Image 1 (cartoon, rainbow, N blue to C red):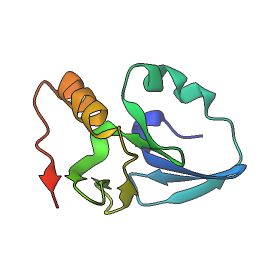
Image 2 (cartoon, rainbow, N blue to C red):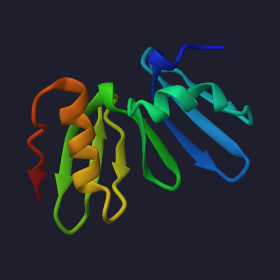
Image 3 (cartoon, one colour):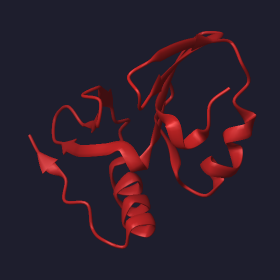
Length: 105
């Protein structure tokens, strides 16, 4: 298995998930990710969309506007569910002690 600190994001598709790792690997899995619950509760991981769990440490950019999204360090563009914009920005500030200045498209 891999450590939570190696995970950029997880994309869920039905009963299967794709785990995107910082080394560039992608792992398909039907594993239970309950071991991430502590990190999720602590705000390191955040559900930005029902299908996407992201690691805040790998956020490169937050795009707001008509098509809100989060750009991850691996270049993945993840849709940002309506109503989650301010929450993800607040979590970023909480964990990193600085404001994340989102881009507006």
